[in-house]
Image 1 (cartoon, rainbow, N blue to C red):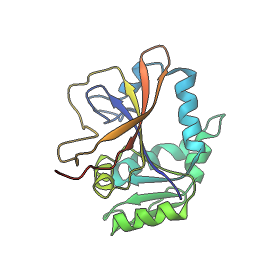
Image 2: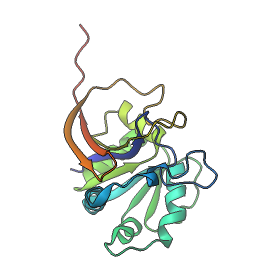
Image 3: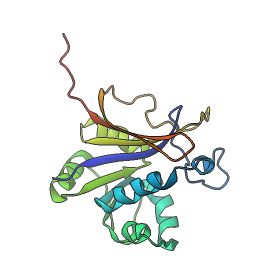
Image 4: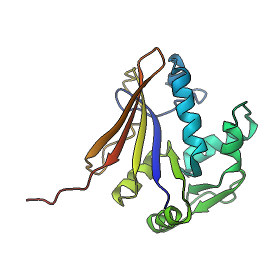
Length: 196
């Protein structure tokens, strides 16, 4: 059974918006201010290589679909991104054009639960804040991998925005990467204790 993994770049104040630098964005490319070192780069390569599929919200999917088909690299990251199956949750996207993409239009919780039985490797969710919160509501997230950057942005979309369901997480890993204070924190949801 596949494990659903939420993997995000996050500022100290919880912002995950535009880490790669959408043109014209207030915080465009804020992660590029920091050196995450070889360990940080290796972590991301190993993560994608262990994954069987991507699950994305429409906005994140659109950004990825615009950028990744034109990318290449020596370690095969881009080839893996472009070749692996991709699922986008959307009621408005008609024809996904990125290679190996399918649209999930309805009954998202059931469809995602089915994906977890179909794949043995990780199902990665990046960006896609609204989708992440919906997956949390349905108890479908198995792990959070947060690459925390030592910056307070002060504004922007937060991963755990207001309305996110209350959750208790257990810390399963910490890893400092690079010389600039970037940390990878790995959490798994803990079972909710019944109300007294």
